Amino acid sequence: MKILPNKIIGFFLLFLSLTIVVKAQNSKPKFKVIAFYTAINDQAHISFVHEANRSFPEIAQKYHFSYDSTNNWENLNTEFLSKYQIVLFLDTRPEEPAQRAAFQQYIEKGGAWIGFHFAGFALNNSKFNQDWDWYHNQFLGSGQYKSNTWRPTSAVLRVEDRKHPATKKLPETFKSSPNEWYRWENDLRKNTDIKILLSIDSTSFPLGTGPKAHEIWHSGYYPVVWTNKKYRMLYLNMGHNDIDYEHKTNKELSFQFVNEIQNQLIINSLLWLGTKKKR
Image 1 (tube, rainbow, N blue to C red):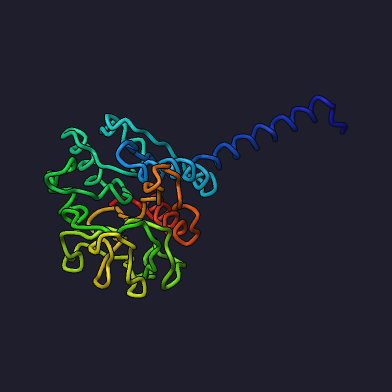
Image 2: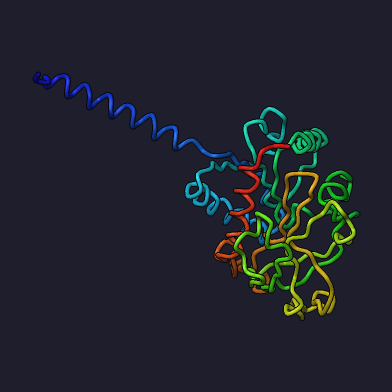
């Protein structure tokens, strides 16, 4: 029996349409990420936000998730957040009570979060008072900011839990991108809900160059990446690029996403939180 040309064409079109459907299904993102940012407070933080918004779309394409970003914090509401599996705070936190309530509800219902650097900052008698107890003391566990190193410098970071999904295949220690490192009010080691994943290794000391003496750390214990076991979250202290303030050029002197090991930590964290089922 001969197959007529129009039948051949029909079979071909049917095969083509099925192929397109399969590809469309395969291209559906595994999860969706939304990043909130302000990018007006500090040139080093602005630099990081711009770098993140260049880098995350490339990472998303490679690892098959979607990435959106917004500087409109009014979007931090229940309806908008319901579209996303992971929320990122790139440089700040929400300030309005309604936004804070929507975020807390999102988290307590199983939503995931990753915060960078200044997203954890709070200091009374500053523009960012510690006026959100749930976020700083219960969720992050860190309390207020106490001090920092200066200038931004690389540190040797120690992986404290190499079995955690976020630290999978990371070496025992590695050198970070230059960063301003924070010290916190609360000792996270005493909080049973907190799992510290990375801290500053003692080989980093002295850390910082000054010029003020207290901006150089010579000893101590400083966690820089941790998770709260009660929630689907991760905080990373990285997120402050080095900027040429001294010569008033505001030239970018360092970047975060050029560090492949540090990138792997971020990718691991996204994949862990994005594909992990809600509680």
